[in-house]
Amino acid sequence: MQNTSRQLLSEALSRKGLSLREMARRAGTSHATISAYMSGRKSPSMDTLMRIVGACDFAVDFDLRPRVREANGLSRGEELEAVLRLADEFPANPVKDPNYPKFPARQGDRTA
Image 1 (tube, helix red, strand yellow):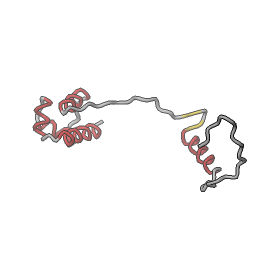
Image 2 (cartoon, rainbow, N blue to C red):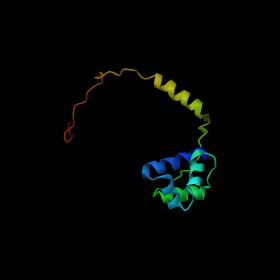
Image 3 (cartoon, rainbow, N blue to C red):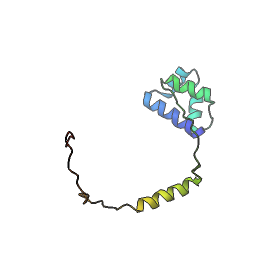
Image 4 (tube, helix red, strand yellow):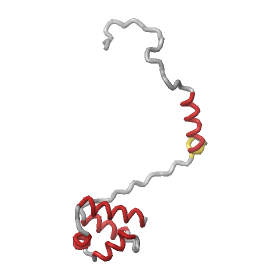
């Protein structure tokens, strides 16, 4: 979380175009504390991080998703290998005008 908080604070500061002191003033903390967070000497709590980012008029959104480790009894690596084997079955350079039978258009069908 520490590296992520450093990145978030740095990006918020850069995108908002604030000085370190202005960011600290808006967040209600000292510039030394913000500096410590950004250098990695200290790590902010989640509430503090949200408050500082919010003081720069940004929000942080998290997306929690289930981790897929297996599908249909196959591990993700085995599934990828199966997909790659299937892809090898297709030609690398498909024919531009395949020789398939052409069916006559029916009355009422639109033609392109």
